[in-house]
Length: 192
Ligand code: GRF
Image 1 (cartoon, rainbow, N blue to C red):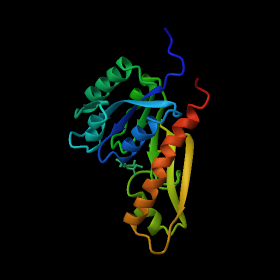
Image 2 (cartoon, helix red, strand yellow; image 1 turned 90 degrees about the horizontal axis):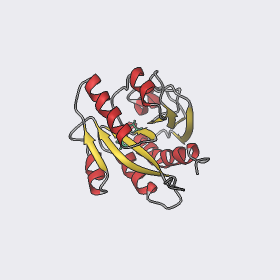
Image 3 (cartoon, rainbow, N blue to C red; image 1 turned 60 degrees about the vertical axis):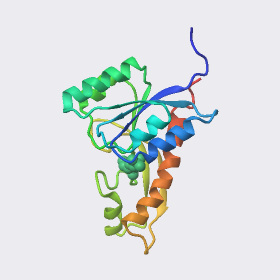
């Protein structure tokens, strides 16, 4: 039987704190939202986000393995759980082109800068040092090139003279929590 109006099953990949994961779980519980966090995968056993998955009784796995074993295990979990979208949220590992090709579902990532500016790490520090007036976050599709896939949503914030990397990170994290949910709702808009 086909379940009408069923929520899209997403998997969230994390490596650490998991504040974006926590927020996606919270938002996914709203009746109006079209997605459901069905699976959490971490590549780090001490990722705090895993506690959040456990608390919410969401299937969670920690896979601390080298590339082919890691990706083969993940692929199997994605298939057996019928996951429809993967969301990278503070996932500090680069997925191989082979994985991206084989998985055959959209992979989204959230990045703390206004891409294409400041790909990679230490984005807040770099935005401040470059004396940019604005920074923000971007939710984008993942392709084979780091932080380079098609943009879905971008949110920006002013960099004040008084900002340092920490204060800017805090401001942008708040935006991230809005942006990821909005990006998912945007790509799932036409889904019944
Ligand atoms: C976020 O700033 C995200 O943009 C970046 O890593 C951080 C993860 O934070 N990719 P959290 O683990 O979701 O709290």
